[in-house]
Amino acid sequence: MSHSETSSEKIDYEFRWKDPKEIKRKWESFAKFGYTSAQAPKTVEMTGKNFDKWLKDANVIDGKLITTTMTGIAFSKVTGQKKKATFNETQQVIINVAKDRSKNSKNDVQAEIDSICSKLEAIELPTLKTAIKVSTEGNVYERLTDHNKYTGAHKERFDTDGKGKGKAGREDIVVNTGYVSSYKNAGKNARIMKE
Image (tube, rainbow, N blue to C red; front, side):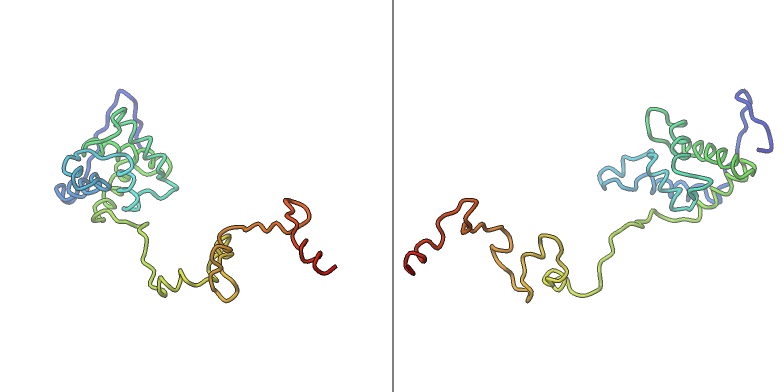
């Protein structure tokens, strides 16, 4: 840090948003992300999870200089017990994150704030990066009916030709024909008839 900062001395940092109304709109969209359409209109504060999403989508959280642990600590310092932050409180969290980053990067805190702000302004709306993609390969029925793709206990339900074994493939049927384990005199009549 280029200047010393004590607990009695408060330094005001400046947010140089290009369009404050636009950044507020983006903040609101991230604050409402994940809520139902009934809950979203009532949402006026951002959770720590949504704050992290905002920073991740903007590539502010890089896993090295800024981590989710750092942002979580900075967020809880500002919000305390309530666990949610207003837009102004979110700006204070950004200042805390910039202070942490400046310790590691040796840049000025204001320069870090400007860097974070420019990244936050560059993104639009929240994205679903982990959404499940629909498979375009093959047919669903082909995958479900191809017995070669089954593993474990399921593969025992089909014979080598792919024909279902029926009940024999689903259950272990016990045949009591042995001398031990519940012997039921199997073949006794056939032996008597031969003699």
